[in-house]
Amino acid sequence: MQGVNWVALIVFILLFASVSWLGFAAARWRRGDLDQLHEWGLGGRRFGTLITWFLVGGDLYTAYTFIAVPALAFGSGALAFFAVPYTIVIYPILFLVFPRLWYVCHKRGYITAGDFVKGRFGNRWLALAITITGIVATMPYIALQLVGIQVVVGALGISGTGFMAEMPLLIAFAVLAAFTYSSGLRAPASIAIVKDILIYITAFAAVIIIPMQLGGFGKIFAAVPPAKVILAAPGANTTGAYSAYATLALGSALALFLYPHSLTGILSASSGRAIRRNAAMLPGYTFMLGLLALIGFFAIAAGVDKLPEYAEGFKQFKNNFAVPALLLHSFPSWFVGVAFAAIGIGALVPAAIMSIAAANLYTRNIHREFINKNPTDKEESQIAKWVSLIVKVGALAFILFVPTQYAIQLQLLGGIWIIQTLPAVMLGAYTRWFNSWALLVGWAVGTFAGTWMAIAADLKPTFPLHFAGYTFPGYTAFYTVVLNLALAVILTPVFNALSARQGRIDETLAGDYYA
Amino acid sequence: MNHTQDKGRGWSWWYLLFVVQFIAVLWPPFYNSIEPSWMGIPYFYWYQMLWVIVAAVFTAVVHFATRR
Image (tube, rainbow over all chains, first blue to last red; front, side, top):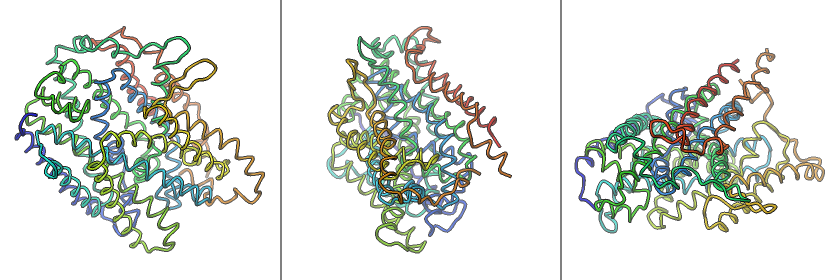
């Protein structure tokens, strides 16, 4: 690989250092008693419409997204664009379901999905299933954020052997862990603002300047192999790429807001109305994501994978190196520093929120439920702070000692697992009709079936479902949540008939779900 | 006190705008083609990018129309 790019490295370090300072200073922002879990872990639920926009945007559109979506376009073409319909259809879901969830959580003091399910259905085992699913799905997601940092650090030309090679990652992580511990959710909320400004500058510069260098969009798409420009038309007796594309978009959308870090971002809003406004404003990020996906095609047209100076990067990081290589190829060093800092900082925001979300889950729904039933506020927030550290160390160990490919595959499985909480959490916001044991059976069958199908499909996200002589390739998460839901619907009357006592323990009231 | 609030919680016909955007972007046969291209960008891409904007406008319309 080329040597160290000093100008880019210095810009990168300066930007990184300034947001780290911001992370620590954030403890005093909208000051609250950080010895209370809802202050540390939800920022005191005081973020208005604009801060929520930055926070949720920084939370959902992660460093890994910025690397992986263009990388998929670079490698597989049009299929990668499913990220756009995916991030279009999430917002009606956000608009309809999550203000209700916000109101009930606000009125009842719930901090996690586990809290809500416990209160709504009165079943601690269902709440435990939701909690464990959340924590397990989040861990590989945190690890993947580190992949984002690794790729840009590698692209800056920093290489070494053994321990020294991992130093930048270790430093970044130590800083992340320290400011998350001391400032809680206020840290990523403040950093998200800087990160987003940098990302928007980078995306618009790339989408305007690089096509000018390459001779316009017409030439760029002419350079892309025809089979990659649009989806392959389905053959006979199959819905082919069409059903794969649509179910990937819809399944991913249904799963996204079930992730603990999404819920943490949403619950920290100051009102249900702030969430509704955000449903109309957050597509701003979707537009940027679409632009970034196009960058994958720019990389094909620029032929960066054929250039000798990037050969080693591609060898090490595969297609994930497409975006960094294109930025290095197209921009002066100082701007490369800005762009890489945007991606690197883009990893810190979601990693911080994810670790806080996992910590909230453990503290509320495992420790308080099963270990120490009556902690003081201070004990509770202290446990959460320690757990946020443990979660991050776990993710770091994962990325250092386990091949990256496993983190990617686990994150894929994580999407299949987390969607199984949909009937209890999302539909639970609307109805108490379901029997909690029926929901638990649906969750278990969905989880096992999804895991089995993913393994049978060679850990690819789509599964070729055969039915009546037709093949329907589709997102495994989507198919299995349908199965889960069908079971919950069928078993609810059965379980209700078996036990008359069951199913009347709902501590929430109808009026808790709106203003 | 609750009467006006009840209106905001139930079904609103404005939500049909959400159904429209779901169908428009989740049915690939509508947009899986290169032509008509715009400024060299295949239809597949600019159609979906356009829907990002249309969907945001629809959501804003629903927000204001169903606001209590």
